[in-house]
Image (cartoon, rainbow, N blue to C red; front, side, top):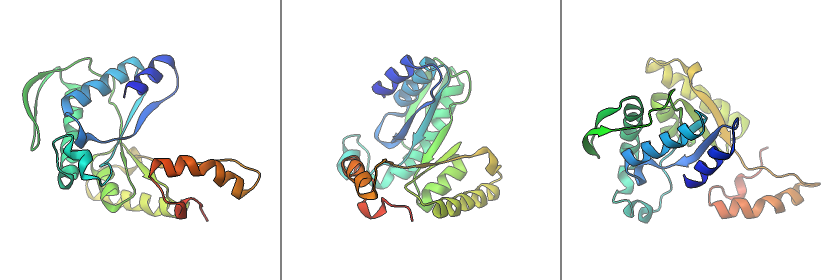
Length: 204
């Protein structure tokens, strides 16, 4: 988030955001305050992309949480963020966190959008229930359409208007004279990210 703060401070029109932020690894009140501060510095240009994170237990042990709790923690922290962003004093309590009478500021002038990252059925379900947007990862156009239809169905069953949920797809890209040349440019970034195996690089 420090780097995002610097970008927010040096730009005036660009939307800035996280892709993705893992709520289960951080204190929710401190996270909500840091994100609200970035939104304040950017004059309301922040988008908060959240997700469950990777499958390495040690990453969660460092935060004194368990890997098998990350979904429930995330589901609990998202509404807690919104509660803190709209109340100068509130009780930050839930299954995994308790801190009564939290004073909070600066309050965002407008609601900070929260996009749910991930392409699994659980991520789509979470986006339909809790998200202002859905950020899928490395989907083909056909997969993106199918996932979007699934999101629509879940949102409607839950009484939400699907048209109010923004859709986006996280992708890597490179330009080259040939496919092989482009892959040579892209390979270091993709392999360094540990996010996508080479078999998923090409979209048919």
